[in-house]
Length: 166
Image (cartoon, rainbow, N blue to C red; front, side, top):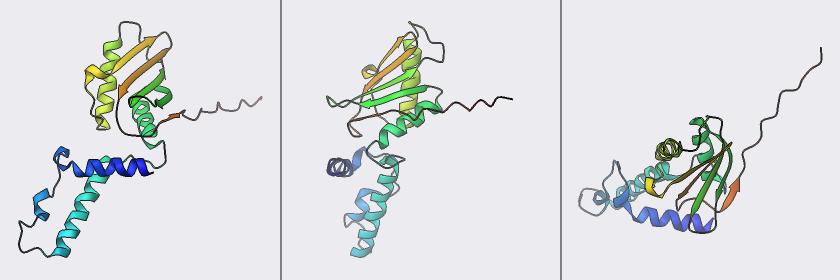
């Protein structure tokens, strides 16, 4: 918990990297002389709330970002089997089953799709730093991202419907 709080604080302090804030940072810097100190504090709280609503994961828990990646790639039509954030260099690895019929040589297509899905989650990655691989029935995507905790997320397996003998 402490690591995520300090990371969040560092993102808060970098307000210039935040697009589409409806409240300008200098609104609470004393430029508006009609605002009382209580109004400035309320305005600062609203700004922080807007920031966290845009940057916080959609779920809670230690593997929240893993679950968000799982949902996004599943919605994109991929059968995700494992999502892991490695302990070295903030490397993320997403393993998927090849149910789309991709073959060796379709890595560029997989890379474009992966970058598109990552962009929907506002993961800012340079496409040159995303690696996609196809190995028969397995797909793998590697990329660097400084969010999330180290760990492995394996999606729950769907149970096959029970066969009832007639």
